[in-house]
Length: 190
Length: 190
DNA sequence: GCGTCCATGTAAATGGTTACATGATTAT
DNA sequence: ATAATCATGTAACCATTTACATGGACGC
Image (cartoon, rainbow over the protein chains, first blue to last red):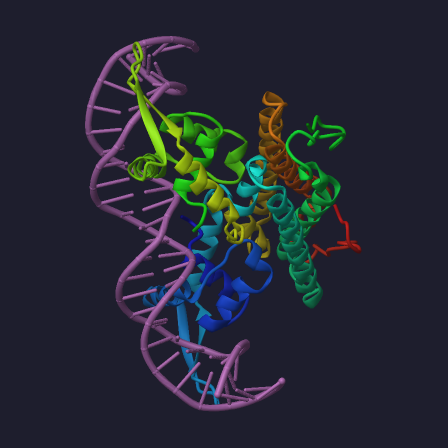
């Protein structure tokens, strides 16, 4: 894997100094969360490796009332490592959806369950959409790359929401009734 | 994980008897490939577990010229297990994209690299779209659940392709020039 | 009082991917 | 000849996720 926890930390530090805790927040809450998540269990060990490699430096920051913070800064070596990683061939995207897997087998499930799954899928996609919009609104001056990626994410969530609202009746009623009607025009949907 | 290799095999066998080799093909080549991939390394052990649990049965099929095939069939117990798994709370979707991660940091990359990444992303999405269309054309009588999921996949790929073609110039020129102009209006961007 | 946020870390468990091992047939 | 397809499996490897451990401050 070319983009592993180490690269992920380096990326966060390219945007500015940060502690492990803050790096996690970036990937867990920020606009990056849709692309790549990272928990403490992967970040803290990665930072130690980077420190040993001298790709980053640390500064202990004492805080009043809070535990000490360790703020990491990327070094020139780290910057070079990061750029190198960005030049490697990216691995294919990985996507895994339990809920879509379940919906695939809707025909074997009770009608209630089908409806519940669709509803849940619609709801979560709407939430993601709102969350992304909120993130984008917070940083209107974000660099072009990040805005582009956020735009892609937005387009995806919006497309899913639209599709569901237009087609959710497909799975209503039992199998016999479900005749997939018009669907998407142009490029041979069906 | 509620939908693991075992459940995945059970799902494939719900659609009909199959060998490990054939199950892999379903998840590697078929319309399911976008949702959940599975290699031999996870399928064969899963089938053995299922056999021990008596969720499936095997029939050895001797073939002329070919290695013997082991065709698995799901039992009533297996069907019950599968349905039970489909009633559990689905884990949140997992998505990881190295290429989008790279594009997020486009501002730190040479212009050539930016363009190459965008182009590659567009190309792969077009490929996925075509592949899905081909899959859907092959089985026009697919059950409603599967058609719905394929439709979602199609909508996603189509949305990404549209977004890229409309916004790819953002990342042209160097950072100074890249003023993200009109950007995203209100809601339904697309 | 209780939950959440801040803050850093470790260790075990999970579980999928990759590589290896074997081997015949068919298509190029 | 050589690559690809058919066919089954094992074992090491890898990385992430989850649970655990610790602890003060702040809001409700």
